[in-house]
Amino acid sequence: MKKGCLLPFLLGWMTTATAQFLHEGDTIAIISPSSATDTTTINGGIRTLESWGYRCVIGKNALNDYHGFAGTIDERLSDLLWALREPSVKAIMCSRGGDGAAHLLTRLPLDTLRRYPKLIIGFSDVTALLCAEARAGVMGIHGSMCHALKTYEGNDTVSQCLRRMLQGDLPTYRVAPHPLNIEGRAEGIVVGGNLSVYNDLAGSDYDPLLLPGIILFMEDTGEGMSKVDRMLHNIEIRGLLPNIRGIIVGQFNKYKHPENGFEDMYAMLHEYLRHYHIPIAYDFPVGHAHLRNFPLLTGATATLEVTAEGTTLLYTPLR
Image (cartoon, rainbow, N blue to C red):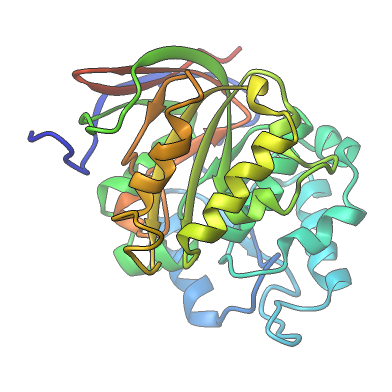
């Protein structure tokens, strides 16, 4: 495997046993907390989940369309609260991202998430809900949603990794070295996702960077280098660097480059992150391209080790 290769390989699996993970026959609720979607996407995702042995139920507002959102704030919140409170629902998959999940947070106390600790599955705009869960001490899964499960029918490596994670089989990820990596070892709570989404949570009760001792992962799409630069400085000027023990840099795409003299996003990020004196892993397969979007268990503790041989992310056994 050549230096800088994008493809990870799995070292092994660690089986865990907690009530939050799923068993065959459990029910997964499909909701749409963000942008509007369509029947084909949701039904395609359900076909894959059912082939994995799960039952699926759809939130009554999941197919609504209100100015591009999947319903009004009240409708989207109603579906989320229903899925959290319904005893037969064991996990919640979001149909898609887009925009709007943060609308729900002002009416979603952290105590509600603590009272109903269920896996919320999604990425992109769903980062807002995953961050809220992490602040509540609840785990979530940053991973594929209905569109990818429909497109690949659950047969690709990323989907199969998600399938095992739902049941509590946590992967150990090993990723090839990248020339910009900063070597080191850190243990902390895995939080993050879409950088622009959690940057907009700054200073709120749902801000994941307020958690002490975190491994922060970041990815984004369609955000230019100057915008990402401002987000990084937002973290610095808030004095939150001591909370970050390690950083995982995922995929950034759909941006203009070169910009401001930097060849690409990684070069710009390295200009700032190299001064943090913590382990930093570049080119981790998490982001908006499905085949480079391996699932991460958020709100869980893991060890990040970056060496000349590559990056390893190992989850701490759960009790």
